[in-house]
Picture 1 (spheres, rainbow, N blue to C red):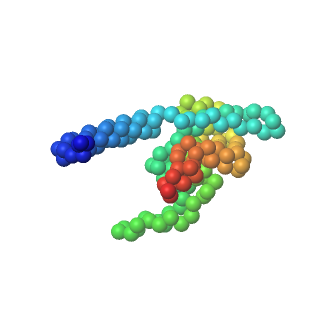
Picture 2 (picture 1 turned 90 degrees about the horizontal axis):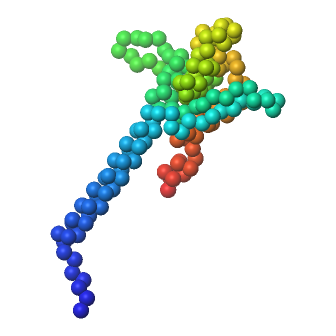
Picture 3 (picture 1 turned 30 degrees about the vertical axis):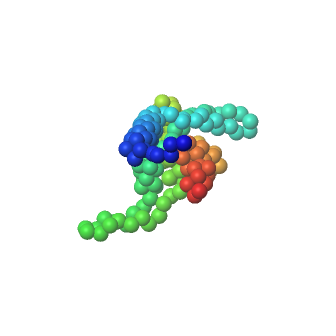
Length: 165
């Protein structure tokens, strides 16, 4: 005669073990995500070519939500500050916002060699790295770099599709 009896204490113990296993997997995954966020994990090399000639290469890394917001704030004009009133965004310079995103996403080592290169800034008569980006990259080149930054930062369609299902 088959034994169909399930001990409720044993079943509860098994469920507790499954919960702990899932929690450990979750914790491990979250710690791995945090580690990747702190480093240049996921960085991708960006070649800039014109007329079939490679002009420069630099690496971009995923950006955080804070970095994205900072780029937006720097490229946005706000209402003047008034006591006890929140400031409102008036206008965002999209080209400048994209330059700030590229600047923020460029790996530190490459940023120092390219956008923050003092000799290059002097030659272009600009004062900061984002101005170099505006002067040297064409609109389409900036758009392609932004597409890569968005992709490696998690703004791809596959993730959005998974979330819908």
